[in-house]
Length: 236
Ligand SMILES: O=C(O)c1ccccc1NCC(=O)[C@H](O)[C@H](O)COP(=O)(O)O
Image (cartoon, rainbow, N blue to C red; front, side, top):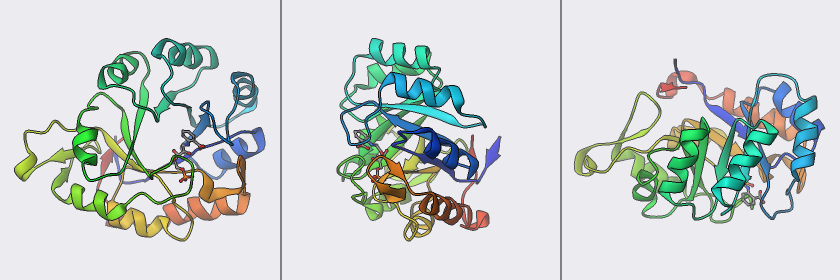
């Protein structure tokens, strides 16, 4: 299916109320941070949230440098849709997980060689371009992403298809923008970067680990408010 609807993932969910609120407001995905964090959750907390969550939403476990066997066990035992990897997981580890899990997101901090780094992870479902510190609310450098994407052609499946001088660099996956997104900057970021999706955590929180329903509503509505005609079409 081809769409220009921007995918919205709400990360750092720690409780059922926030999970239900984000889902009811139309989030496409939720993220549960298993890594050390102010938003860290246990497998038991996630199991309890998922057992009471209704509605169609993808669920991601967020990991940093965990052994792949552990990641797989968590996904299987909790019934997560996918994983988001924020450490120095290798392309081989990511490929191994993608053969077994349909939704694998590799997070990479946006730097000057961001596009080359992402291209190493061809087997992901999506690449997430993050700010310098995950979950910190610090902005990813949109101009770097936008400039690098300008030297690339959007592919039908939402990938960053290389063109011109970079045609020999393999094409990475869908692109999700994260890092410091908030209600007052997300529309501008989408217009500038034209991502497949956006991911937010601290920008919709009241306090670390607790989402603010008004901020959630305003954020999702700001994303949905970006004129679809101004965006490229992506495969889902
Ligand atoms: O949230 C954390 O503390 C965290 C810790 C370790 C790995 C990942 C983590 N979060 C990932 C995210 O919440 C987001 O994908 C992303 O970094 C955006 O965060 P924010 O700038 O707060 O919107």
